[in-house]
Length: 399
Image (cartoon, rainbow, N blue to C red; front, side):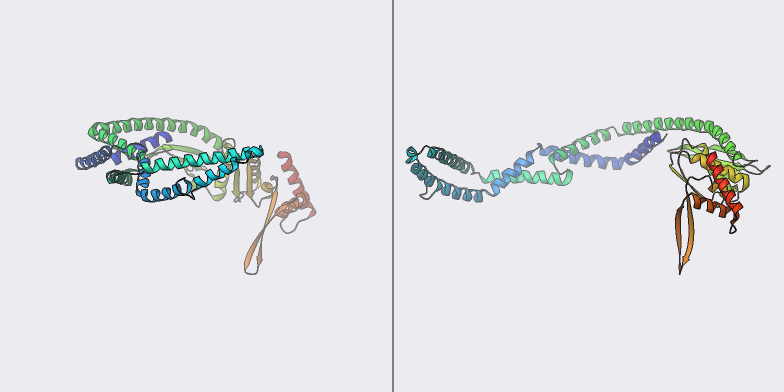
């Protein structure tokens, strides 16, 4: 249902965005044709811009390149008396005149000869580069104009030639769509109607699953509520068609309850007291203990409005849930507190103009003392302490 709902919503959005009147359609077509033609007329080639930019940099700085190379050639060549080439040749001749006296000098001669050869190759390459450095003004202007054209297109359609060409392909596809616009929109609407029909069918199937399982869950919750001392409880889960379809289908689901004989079923939030709501939630969590993905459950004063046998049953349910997940329960009833694995005592104390809350974890002995205080109030006798110990032991046996 959720997947089909998102598909229908996406199609609705697309239909809304692409619905055009004749005037808008003509304007869109003219703009797309202009943009496609402007890019096509440029006859762009991938990588062309990088080659042109390199050539433009070379042409723009040709004078500086020529001057620097001329100076380098003069300093490293053989033309000038103090050039590196001449100096290196003289050094090599001087070394060769003495290599006959010591074989160790032959390696030095080879190294110097290699340096001379490398320098000669360098000067040859410089000479050739300088001879190719000349170009006419027309080449420079042509390169500059071509770069301006490409940069203009980049400013409008993409940061690279590849992006500009993709934009052109998109406009060509858009023009094909506009050329057969009516058929295109009919296809979109037909696709939406098909998805909408599938969505409604899926919602019907989901609703049937809900109604079927609502009957099962209703009975299980009713049994759980009776186990929590709702002796005359009536419970029902109403599954009704709602006003609109969402990702969860078209059902409105409502929990109905009656806790007094002769009363009609009414929405849970309208008739249940705070204590009853807590017990209903406890019943739901008990029934769904194996399905619910929540790791920790917090019950804040679930003992409100209950006592005696009802409190005992509530404690049993809390202990049951506590076997599979963490349960934190704030309570004033000893029957409920006794079933816990760990006890924390919460105290509030006034300090000047503020109130401080202390939370203390209790050991076994302190836990029994607090249970006795809940049982006997301020006057904790030996008999009350024995009752607290017995209550604690009975809770352990039940767990």
